[in-house]
Amino acid sequence: MPISDLGLDKTLAALGVAQASQVPALFAEVRAHFEGHFKTVHDESEWKMFRDRWLGRKSGVLTQITENWLKPATPELKRAVGASLNELRAYVETQIEARRTAIESGAEEAALARGRIDLSLPGVIRPVGSRHLIRQVFQEIEDIFFSIGFSIVEGPEIETPYYNFEALNIPEFHPVRDDMDTFYIDLPKGAPGQLLLRTHTSPMQIRTMEKRKPPVRIIVPGKVYRRDNPDATHSFIFHQVEGLAVDSDITFCDFTGTIEYFVKQFFGPSVKTRFRPSYFPFTEPSVEFDVSCPFCSGTGSSAGGGTCSKCKGAAWIELFGAGMVDPAVYGFVNYDAKKVSGFAFGMGVDRLAMLKYGIDDIQVFFQNDVRFLRQFP
Ligand code: PHE
Image (cartoon, rainbow, N blue to C red; front, side):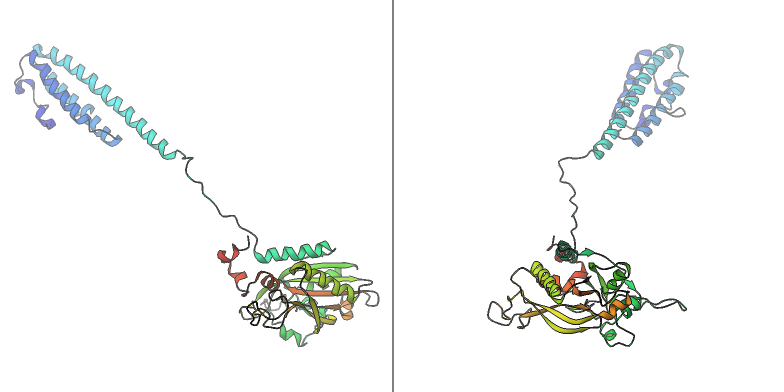
């Protein structure tokens, strides 16, 4: 029944109510109407509309009853209307107030339920990183040399031509500069001198000998840069470990013994080493060290009888350059070439890692593909 049917805008006389005995039934209807609508009040906005409808000062149901039914009523009716109205008001007010509390606590509970932590849910598992294979191989190399008395030093990747070339007995226009296609750094006009990205870790031989008196026994792990086009065995950035030992009585035997010790520690006791004459401006004599191919055990043929794909049948794999320190180098660092002797070597870490772990493309070291990285946790 619509609320307008209650006759709230009419006087009791107009509604045909003349006796006190008719009043309770009239109010019972109003109350039934209240209850019918009250059932539909569930949230705060519904509740506000409902409260205004019933308790609003100007035109709420109770105000209308006061204005239209009570005030104009005959003295005989006034008592009964007044009593019923008071009863109705008390009922309506308590009901409406009770609903407010219910709605508020319901909302609170819902909010609590939303914020409750479900301890039975599985946790968020964040993957733990691991060291890059190159980092791991650096560590292996460092451990081996550390155990035989070498210490580890690091140096700048941005170098001067003096340390990268001149002091290593590579004067300007020396042909080996062509083999080391170099990245030069664009400096502002008028800047004194030149800077470059070091093409090898050998500059640290000079920097170390400038600072220390012999005996010197160091290795230098680090990044180096060359203008190479990327392919399976070339990258414009790669890694080297330099070695330098200088003392008063170091011989070629100490040199080959140290290298052989390292290679066997790194690849295992069954590999063999050999060296061939080579040339570097800062060592004399210079050699290339080879290791017997760890994939075909130095036979040159694969298990199936074909040619070993790693050493291409050669049975040997070129490992690194080395030699006895050229006396000319001592001149640059104020060592007395008559009193000291020593050896130096430089190894490509990426190459060692590829050989030891059977990787055939150097590019995977720089692509950071987790499918590759996860294989070396
Ligand atoms: N610096 C040389 C290179 O990068 C390697 C090397 C180091 C050779 C030390 C001899 C002695 O090719």
